[in-house]
Structures are given as structure tokens and as C-alpha cells.
Length: 245
Image (cartoon, rainbow, N blue to C red; front, side, top):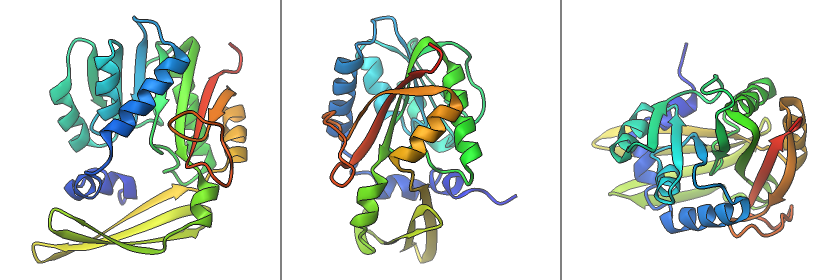
């Protein structure tokens, strides 16, 4: 069976070259605001789902929490494991499959680390797995891009330069997905990758949360936790609890 786009791209060294400018200060600012809002206790156990190289997990651990990060990418987890300590651990794991049961106080799924799968059923099953990982009073934080704004303001073509490589990027909306095609040449070889992320709306998430046993208790439109505005907000950030809690 051919690998999915995310299995190829996220394990590629070029993924990290293209996105090396991602802002750690912004990530830490977001985490600070979330912690101020959620007020996790000092002994809280936190799960970072699709943690990548661990930038959010490492910062949460520095704030004193017991943090576990999971990601499908072997290369990202191998990198993150250099930061491990007795309260910080990283594992290669597919978010669709059960990990821990009734264990974590808060599960984070940040920076649009969702929407990768083909069917709604796969996404609902992933959310059900998130739910099972949480204890009775556990909270899910899911941070997604605002599809409505992206689709209205799509930059169809751009070139990004990083580490001497010119990345040619084209974007389109097709089949309910926002599709980014990335092509470049390096060391006399041509490469091409894709990112295909579902253009989920607020209504889509409402339906999926209901099907997976979550209820929305709050939602925001940016990393400052300002109110969500469909046409203007950059992000769509949900705070959810178990529906039967």
C-alpha cells in the first residue's frame, strides 16, 4: 500500500528545512495563554498529539507539567527524544489508535495537526481516541486553521527560499481539501510533495465533536484567545470536554 502524503512529507528532512522559520515565541505565547485560561494543576498529565519535534511539549514540560508527545514521524520523534526527562517522553504513534486510557488531564492537538485523513469516519475515530485518553474531567484543545479565511485569501503560487533551496509552492481548493503542492530541486534531483488538509468549518467540527462524545465549552480565533470571527480570524481553536462529564 502506498504511503499517505503525511507519512512521506513529515519524515522528509525537507519538511523541516521549509518550515524552519516557524516561530517558537509565538508557540510559547500560545501555550502561556492556554495555561492561563485552563489553569492546569501542577501535577497535571498532558498529551501533545502530533507533537512533531516537540516544541510545544518541551515548553509545557519547562512549565513543570508531566508531558507525553506522540507523532507518526520517526524522524521527528527521534529528534524530540533528546529533550526527554522523567516528566517528558516521546513516542511514535498514530493518533487514530488507542494510546493511554483515562489518563491525561489535557490533550493538545495544535497547529493544524488534524484533517489529514480521507474520510470523516477516520477523523471521528481519531477524536474518539483522544477522548478515551482523557480522564473523566479531561479537556481537549484542538487548534486548526480557519478554513473560511484561507479559502477566501488563497495565494495560488509562491516561492520560498531556505538553505539554498527554492521551494515552488502552489495551492488550490479541491474535493473539500486545501491542497499545497511543493516542488524543488536539490543536489541535481527533483522532488515533489503534497499537503492535503481537510477544509473543515466550525459546523464540521461541531458535528464531529458530537459524534465522538465531546462538547465545545469555548472557542477562539487566534493565539491571544480573542473571539472567533469567521471571515477575519486566522485560527479556530476549540476547548472541549467529555460530553458525559
